[in-house]
Length: 357
Image (cartoon, rainbow, N blue to C red; front, side, top):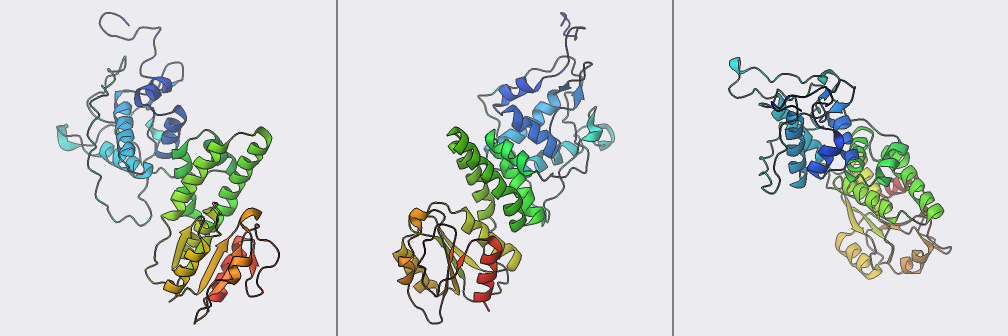
């Protein structure tokens, strides 16, 4: 760069992804995910063909990052940033929209979320006083407004391999966004059978081969649980008068299957459920049965250490009766004759549906 601040022949205008990642404190894979999924990324290319971020791109990324740090889900944060980007620029002659950045014809905005009825915008998040803005990128001539993102982006549904790579990279944002998109588009059962289970199989195989990867399992489990738990709420018009109660066996910590089952019952079948979660003591389960009078009680055991069937025989006998169903591969032989054993998602749904009729 010469003394006048002009870009010389040996320099590329704008910023590379590494510099932006360091500035924002956001991993480069996450920045790539924001670009691919939401169209929030570099708007131009250098003469050498490299994607480069300009000052407008940085402002959008800083706003995206601030919203997420404030607790806004990534999809909503992106939608808010893109809405601001396409709004008319104050003071522009004629009040016209901001111009489309170079190279923007292959980037898209996020469509409204399913069921969106014109939600209020999130308030602006105060700037972090400890972070100074980057100086203008060399050669940047469009620093006054945020460039808009062109319309019609859509959220892709990953393959199991793509989702597994995001989990191994500990890219929690990509995992959360992809799981949420799959649930919205294909439903709980499809997402569980085609994405969640295969990724867990990959993670477990990696653990068996290397002895490492517990952090990957924990991150992936946390994001899947968060996505499923938000779906488990009372349906507007439940088909059952008495709820379905779901719990893990005492000392069983693998609770994702019961949340997946509860989510499928809620979303796909309009069944009201109650989830007690992991490690439910049998006395507590018995108390919940007496208080709720459930139509069905689903108890999950994944590992043999939690599969002793004897406590199931001591659960209270209610009037009207509650159908107790044992789920998972951890149960030992000797289940009470009145307690059916299921090992698949579809079989569990069938048994519970039968108990409601």
